[in-house]
Image 1 (cartoon, helix red, strand yellow):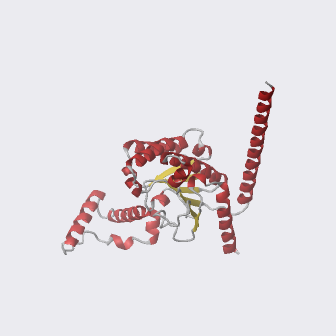
Image 2 (tube, helix red, strand yellow):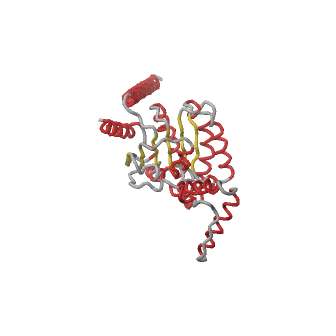
Image 3 (cartoon, helix red, strand yellow):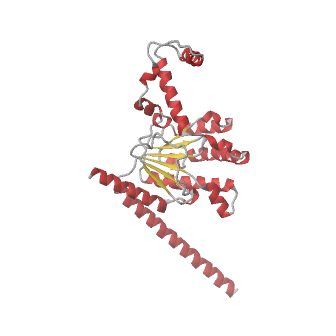
Length: 303
């Protein structure tokens, strides 16, 4: 009995030590956030959440578990951003090309998206607590019907929030976003002459005639002439949903490429950072140096 008491006492002391360390860690985190908040804060930060699969292999976990841990990292990093009053966060959650992955992995990702989107937006959860509006940016019609329904419900649950924005980009590619923006510009220009359906028919017919070496003008003005950098920018899906210019783009896992994410948005005045940390392990102490670096560059620019 005496040995059992000693064991229990040791366990209790160990638990007390752990709790003390956690309190110290939380205090350090709060202090760091206060220091960061004293300087300029970026309005829009984007993340290429890379490394879930390599993280899982390194931990001896299933790929699905790696993606699940990646979702927990998203919650953790998003809350840090919200506590810093970063107005907009964009995350690359699923590329259009990801549909080419093994079907089992794709199915698992679809199930994860369906459940976690609704979890994020549920009453009392993170997005409601911080007044965050959720935008799912991408070619959503490629999703299974159940995921499309979850997307509509999640966006509807947060449509009244106006303090911050979370752009979950899926299924997404920057080339698709830019192509869609140009198409929307042309549709708007053509709508001045004819209705949308007729405009589409005439455009298709014009393309056919051009391939045959024939030309025919259907409209008073050439719709292409009205397309500028500004009109394309204003028709990007992220911009139409209220996103400010992109200040920082971060890619985790050590890979140094953009992988077709927000290429238009990061072409000017955007800091690029490549972290060696896998996304599920990415946290405050990875994020702090990036924010400090951005603050220093802003201070140099203004001085």
